Amino acid sequence: MLNKYPLIKYALYLVGAFVFSSVVQMLINAGNVSSYVAMVITYMCISVIAAVSLNLVLGITGQFSIGHAGFMAIGGYFSAIITKTSLFGMVDRAVFPDIILFIIALLIGGIIAAFAGLLIGMPTLRLRGDYLGIATLGFGEIIRVLFLNWQFVGGAAGYSGVPRMSTFVWAFTLAALTVIVIKNYINSSHGRACKSIREDEIAAETMGINTTKYKVTAFVIGAFFAGISGALLVHMLRLAHPTMFTFMLSVEVLLMVVLGGLGSISGSIAAAVFLTFFSEWFRDFGAVRMIFYSLLMILIMLFRPKGLLGSKEISLSLVRQGLSDLREFPDRIKKRFSKNTENGKGVS
Amino acid sequence: MSVLTTKKMGIRFGGLTAVSNFSINLEEGELVGLIGPNGAGKTTVFNVLTGVYEPSEGEVYFYDHLFSSPEKSLKPYQVTNLGIARTFQNIRLFKEMTVIENVKVAYNKNVTYGFIPSIFHSNVYTKEEAEIDNLAHEFLKIFNLHKKKEELAKNLPYGEQRRLEIARALATNPKLLLLDEPAAGMNPQETHNLMELIKFIRERFKLTILLIEHDMHLVMGVCERIYVLDYGKTIAQGLPEEIRQHPKVIEAYLGEEV
Image (cartoon, rainbow over all chains, first blue to last red; front, side, top):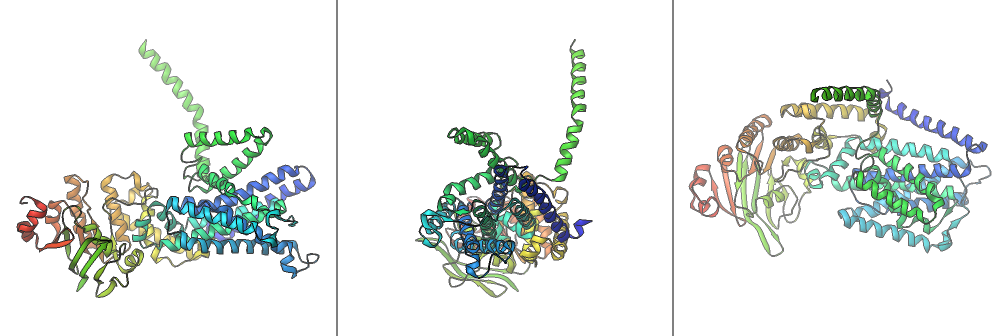
């Protein structure tokens, strides 16, 4: 019945995400969950936002972009400026609710990142494949160096003293929102247009698709959510620093998308959660950690070259199918055994 | 009424003249063939007609509307919206998309809902998507592909991939269809079926068709008029019987009498 009223359905999803994360947040506040774990799970949600937004650009539209850290930096720095200066001194944080200030900061961070995406996308998206990758890589570095030399945001010392506003509730609810928005976009006619560009740009254009428009749109949406994830990250760590947004961060997000499966949203979510967990788990091993991490990637690429989920999505029907397969499993074993004995008789 | 007219169209890549002085005229409802040896510039002509390349000289008219000249040239998607569709020499389906999705892409230009309705799946979205789904299904039925609509395009057999590519091009609702070597890689039986298909869609959709082909049996079988290109120049034009006996054509292309 809810399928008739999609708006209510998605609102309910968001409320559900909010309620769930609030319960977890209460456990965190009460001390039942350590602040370390709280930080890790918040970071997982931030990674999910970054990975899913990159998947729209890379996995769905097929544009090889490795400048995601640049957009995250823009979102992070500009939102931090808003909250730290209390909207340039226009509001009094003693009376003005933090929630609204943070929403304004997130939006401004996201919008400036999206605008940067538009400026970068217009000239570079005419490039293809590796060339686009290198161009976006260059862009990411330019952004980082700009912040490194901008004294207003602390330059090389970083922009510290940002209020801690990202909580698990924020990160989780926004991750849910990101997934809903991007998934719905993919399932629309516009999403099909994006996929057709990934499959064959020339054919897409002869089918009446304005490829430039859709590539830039995907890039801008991706940049917007990357900006949001950067803003959440900065408000969790209470610091914006140029070293946070290096090329390695772009690569990490890229890995999540590739490991999860290009074009699979649930794959990106799974990979973001999994990789964050994995790198935390191996923290105790020190330098050896990177070896484990790299080995894991080699193994996944060897055995699942299309990523953990390929281009499939985890859905309820898939789970149901899996469950019924499991239920049939004992029967199948029995059958095999009985067959074997019959065969055995035949031979003797 | 003439559907497509080119006037002294030419295209150069640097110093190389790929096509020169190409003048063609297609009347409404005609089925015209464009033949020539490999490298004669046939596909280049198609690429100019569909906006992939800008012509270096000359003019191209679609229903007396000038749409391509060295001064102004439409982008491929604008040419499609004008009413010219094409297929490719080597099939260019959206391989990792389903059969029905391949067709649905063609309806993208009719979609009126924007970004906001698409992310909230509002009523406009639901209504238009249902419409597109219906249209695409009916369309696949015409081509007898509806039973395979949920399969990935790459999993179809070769002949059906061709059929889907033609179906997809027709879904953009063109008045002029350009077919680039539709029979390439087909066995005689498949070629025969293709000939039937071409005749059928021509009646069904009231199309004007321009066809590039190497298979002489197919060209002579379905085309009403033929243009022959060699080294970018039109060396002959006329009825199939005339082309068959044209000495220049025999010398340049056929090598022997068909």
